[in-house]
Figure 1 (tube, rainbow, N blue to C red):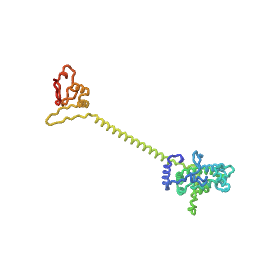
Figure 2 (figure 1 turned 135 degrees about the vertical axis):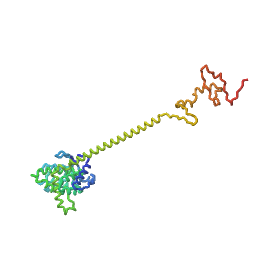
Figure 3 (figure 1 turned 60 degrees about the vertical axis):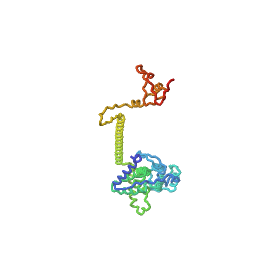
Figure 4 (figure 1 turned 180 degrees about the horizontal axis):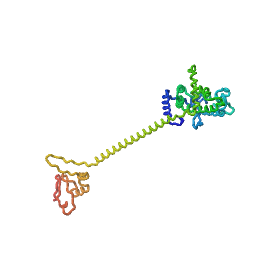
Length: 375
């Protein structure tokens, strides 16, 4: 599985760093400051970062699809049509023809059959040499050199280090190494095996800084060993090891289990809290629905007497007295249709004949009203 096909790229890179520590190699991954496309808008194809170039999706012989610079794919495809030519990437060719090819490519034109494959290979070398940031960025040089000098597991360390490269550099490296591997398949004709290609292309892809140039002999030897190893194992570049995939799957399953456990715990807490609230609400309803009992006053001299409780409706009727209709009937029977000033409440009228009618009853006259005798 290629690194681009995986979503958890950061986790894979962290695991690769852990494996490198087991080999005795320490490296701190830094974020590269990517230059925007606007900074290189005036430039065409050469001397432009990989991230600012026009890209194209290509399919490798293994079936893996990669996004690589369109220029690199065009030049490599042209060289493969004449891959049996002796001295590819080793012979210099014509500088004049190479300048013409560069102008055509900057103008957006395509290569024709009249161009020579030696010149096209030299133009491709020039393209990699003039990159502002090499195919192997400067911050990764020491990492790869430490990997190649390991007494054992150098191949595994180099492949793990490739996973740490930026995506544009990793895609281009995987594509170009597989292209060089196809060139070595015709080494009986073109005389360019893995070691010869490493000697020619190694210092171009992993250039030595000027401050280290006086003592660069040992570094050049190790760089050639590194690229020979990469060409011979080109199909493994950018492929995530099975051990890392298993660890990622294990951690993801564990995290999913922990997430499920946390969700179930939260649900249980919610259910418990809900049951408690329902219980308290039920108790409140029971307490509020109980009628308030009247407790009789207890005196030390008198025995307790039962006190009947009366409902609220009866209390309302007792407090309210007669209705409005009854009051009107009583007032109509009184003299001057006026209410009495006495503190007594008049008796209600009963229409039954057995009792006395209000006419036969003596009239109650208030004290403050004078009675006028008829003359």
